[in-house]
Image (tube, rainbow, N blue to C red):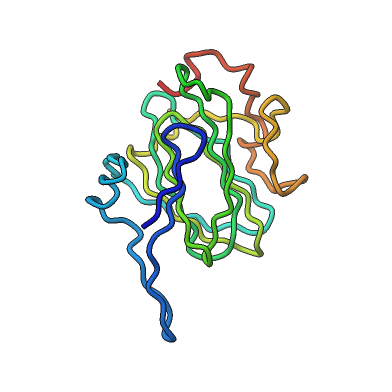
Length: 182
């Protein structure tokens, strides 16, 4: 397993060790002790799988009172995955990091608590899997509009397919401190 630290403290790209032969491949997508050796000590309590079609953009989402760390990966297809630092005391507050995750590159992204998360599907379809360190609570969800010009995320799509809620979120500068992750 190879860990690539990003410029944003705590945010890591993970390249698992892949065992391939003419039959296919095998890799451990998560092994608690190995991840803890690299500083990923989150206690994951919920696993989610999302299936989306090309140009679907989901996000930018976060939980306010019970922020979630996430370990994300793509099972099939390809996405552009984005994490936005919303940790109020972070020197990287308001900065984002994006990475291509795919079924073929098998990379993972570890997102610490206190980040907003979103992704855009760049293949025809994508199946996306992620672990969360806290149970999802729809009444605790917050979000930031995907197209916030002050954040200026370089999404690979200009006219994404959005959910109704993802289309009406505010810009980061319009949120008050109580609307950000605790």
